[in-house]
Amino acid sequence: MTTSPPPPPGAVAFVDRWRELFDACDWSGLRAHEHPDFPEAGPPRQNDSFICGLGKNGYRVKSATLKPFVQPRWSIFRTQRLHPQPTYWCDLVLKDTRGHETEAFIALAPWEGTEGAFRASYYVQLPPKKKVAPLDLGKERQRVAKFIAKAVKDFARVQDARPLQRLRSTTPPTTGP
Image (cartoon, rainbow, N blue to C red; front, side, top):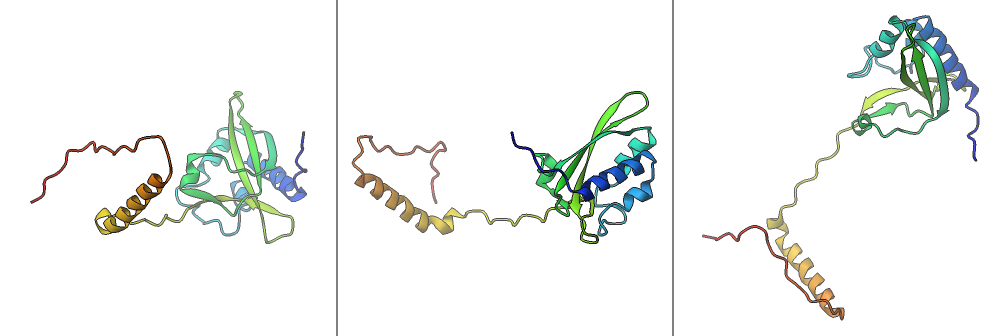
């Protein structure tokens, strides 16, 4: 059994302070724990309303587990990534006065402003993927024909007992002018 090394003291201190601020409903204090380049209005389509809503509805931190960051297989990561790249992950279990529990997380990245300090990462949009031009077989006809001819010759050179069969089209042939 392998155990991971203990988290750095800066990450532990960040989570401890975050818990205190959340439990005190100190939203401006929590904002101060975000990376300095965190947009004032929050990243596009993301804000603090989920966390603030939990705190305002009586949820408090029941437990916080800090571990090395491994990107989960969530659908959001198809279009977004965390910035700055996190190195640690804190799984939070929050509980309200009626005993209801919910989960949340904080992704932590080292903060360049202070040695050993950490700040919360946030989502940013991935750049759009380059569009690839569709294959135009009319333009590529000669290259495709050469490729197929070579493949047939190479197959014919191999002494194979299997018979060569033609491929059948599922669409009816078209008649030209």
